[in-house]
Image 1 (cartoon, one colour):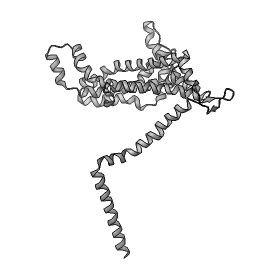
Image 2 (image 1 turned 135 degrees about the vertical axis):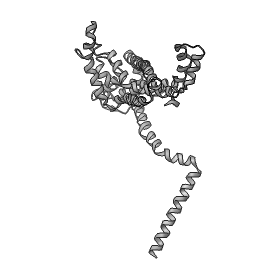
Image 3 (image 1 turned 45 degrees about the horizontal axis):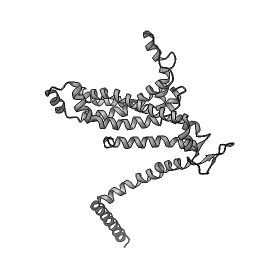
Image 4 (image 1 turned 60 degrees about the horizontal axis):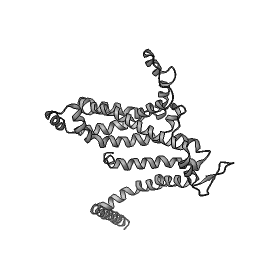
Length: 300
């Protein structure tokens, strides 16, 4: 009787599993919903929840003597952001740095991606892509401190420019731009490389047969088809540069960006740091909405 009961139980379990599998097979939307429940729950609770707490804490104040957070609702922090000229300068400088890094990455990435996708031999393309990805495997801090050594007084930059009567940029805003461009360049190369690899070769041949010069072919054929990929890469370079504060703190000298102000206010004035932290979020959301019109989000 015991063996018969166990066999009957196993058969019942198998039948239940088959019915459940059949139901999921007939209802693809239910299957998709079950698959997405866990990641969406993680996104809602951890990511969106933390952003909500950040935004709410920006309305709190601090005790002037103890610097402790006082949960008294006020818009003083946002009023200070809108009325203080120092904050205006830092925000504009941060957005300008992010845009400059994005532009530099696009200018450098395009010829590299064109070579790896169109000119290099097929057997070398995968190795070149690996070479482009190799810097991403190194530690962020190791790369930044390596650039600090390169740009320091008497460093590699000074040694290379000394025969020409020049010197390296030292520490400051140019050094921060150069370092950030190096850090995020692979994120721009990869989408452009993919887009150029998918570009039909007969379009380039047809443009040449019709008498178009290389620059006209690039402007009228290549650029319109690759522009969404450039915009997709700019989403990474812009957002990563806008929120960075470690690079500027190491090689930026006295340069102040939004990230530096957030970091310096965390212990002294946490609500003000939260208010400053909402600025990159708002700017990035606006940037994503602008890039959405170019089809960049579908290229990610």
